[in-house]
Length: 380
Image 1: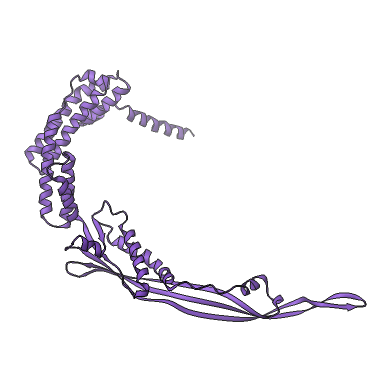
Image 2: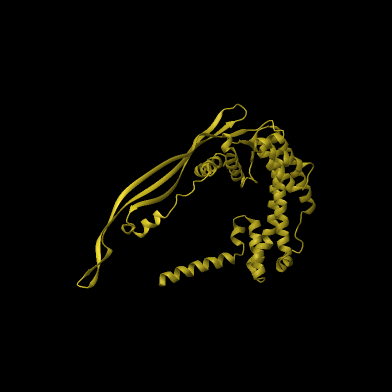
């Protein structure tokens, strides 16, 4: 118990020590920005803390020097993302000034914290242009991968300066060229089942389209592709019921002889007294069963639209058996138990329509096909 209490005390002490950091450790390790933030946080809780006051006074000018050094190095190195660095550093300096303004004791120690308002505005303009140009270069490559890179560059440009040049149009263009365009072709069957096959297709398309709003993929029907005058789809998903049967009927029956002993079958009189008469009763019970089986195979092929080469191919099978049971008897109904009598009073159920049978055997196929297509395009 003492060891447990000691451990808890150490944990609590560690939390309190961390919460009450004066910034000295960060200062000693050369992280002057973090040292300032920790010192300011401590001064909000305890304005009289001498250690935090000392840290802030010493660390703040060094933090500004670090900001300027990082900016100068980025500009001299002339890296493609140099203005990203400049914006980031100016934002750090301005955030530090804002923290000081919001802490009375810190503002007393640093009465005029440096803010880079105009410098940051100019840097954002330069960063917006930098990202915009990088986006144009990536978009010119004409590949899906580079179009996605371009999309991110244009988004970044718009983040620096909202509506910079025609960046909103460029975002739209980049998203289009970055998006894998897939035409999902409906399965065709004979006329008796086409309506149900269309229903299957519509539900599948709705399902795979879910949660794709923020992804680089779009599924089209052939009609939608024609409406957009699409000339360059990337892939086709081709659905086809390769083989199916609906409404195969199988009937069976089984007759059992039933007996029940010691059943009252009448009365007799003996010496003027009436007694029950017992005997064995018999009946022949016939149980009937009608089964209607349906099943089929759906082929799912993913094909490259540019060269018509097959990328993936999988078959999915489904089966459904509908059944109804009833019974009849010949003989004495007293040989039957309650359940058997109930079966004899039943009529065979009306069998479902062929359309319903088609729907039922496609249900397991539907879930498998949806999972397969989602998995195939999960990386986009």
